[in-house]
Length: 121
Image 1 (cartoon, helix red, strand yellow):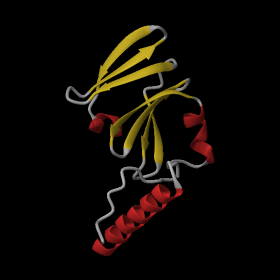
Image 2 (cartoon, rainbow, N blue to C red; image 1 turned 45 degrees about the vertical axis):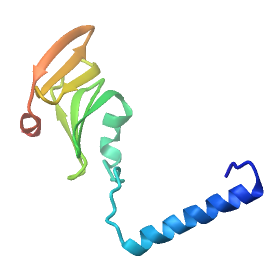
Image 3 (cartoon, rainbow, N blue to C red; image 1 turned 135 degrees about the horizontal axis):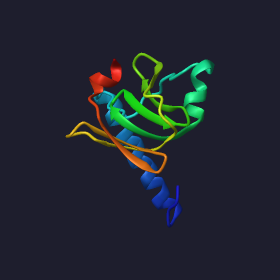
Image 4 (cartoon, rainbow, N blue to C red; image 1 turned 135 degrees about the vertical axis):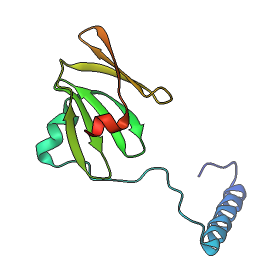
């Protein structure tokens, strides 16, 4: 810990320790933003390894673009589903309020309006 003096460092350590003790005593619910997941096994690793771009569609769904086209990663189910095997996808942009997924393929813009339910089919 960086501090001007030893007494200031001790003061901060005591204050942080007291705060930690209060938080543990109140048993507040865990509000972590990120959670670790096993996304795929070694057979589907090529999809993520060759990814050129990605965007978050929902809390548990990620759309990945790469040399093989477009793929949907579902973190809840732990599966990778290939979608739209086009030419290599270099950039993905997602507009949530319009549910519009824009794909940049071979220096051209291909605008595909897709809902999350269409990606699941």
